[in-house]
Amino acid sequence: MLGMVLAAGAGRRLRPYTDTLPKALVPVDGETTIMDISLRNLAEVDLREVVVIVGYAAQAVHERKEELERRHGVKLTLVHNDKAEEWNNAYSLWCARDYFAQGALLVNGDTVHPVSVEKTLLSAPETSDILLAVDDVKQLADEEMKVTLDGGAVRRITKLMDPAEAYGEYIGATLIRPGAAERLADALRATFERDPQLYYEDGYQEMIERGEQIHVAPIGEVDWVEVDNHDDLAKARTIAVRY
Image 1 (cartoon, one colour):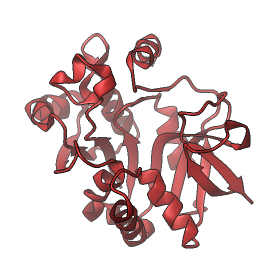
Image 2 (cartoon, rainbow, N blue to C red; image 1 turned 90 degrees about the vertical axis):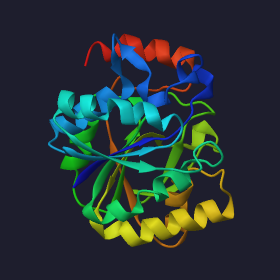
Image 3 (cartoon, rainbow, N blue to C red; image 1 turned 45 degrees about the vertical axis):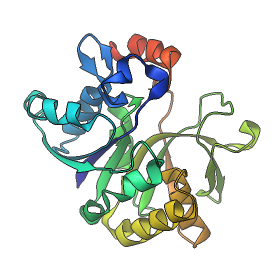
Image 4 (cartoon, rainbow, N blue to C red; image 1 turned 45 degrees about the horizontal axis):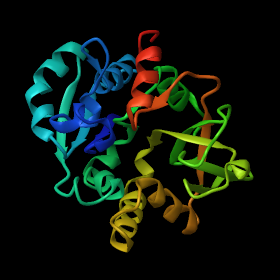
């Protein structure tokens, strides 16, 4: 199984940091970046072969590749998203489709969370080929990627949901088992061909509409944050020092 980091986004709300850096390389603890935390977590669960999908400011990742490999004891394979500044991340994840068959633990490159999330996903029962890490404790608002369940399986995953209806928030970490490879790639392709501005989570919804079972792994009461803006970054800096 591989680690996988989705790190192609521009992160325009984090300027001036992201004038020259992808969001994943924004520092959150001294010189420690969001990507450092992602790679450290993956290495701690012995996922040392890591695919990183790059796009915006990809050269910055290339320049740090050897240093990141040495620091975390990992081997990085960089996959390029040629439409990172035009299309949303359904296409971005599809760019890594050739690696799905090895199985992957995917983490969003803008999420700061402890390694307990990776451990929760890897230790969960094999109920489905795709397993989503979900926060069922946090109070939700409009911006979050929310899920509802039906008999234990995901029924809907979308931001466009009344928070009161949601079971919890998908936190940007997915266990992709090898058996899902072809079906996931096809669903992602159908998603971005329908609308290139859709999220990869819309690809999961496409799979559900096709009859796929996708289950969740609740992460418990965990300090984490998706870093979209400077307020999120300030929160990330308060919690990253505790990991």
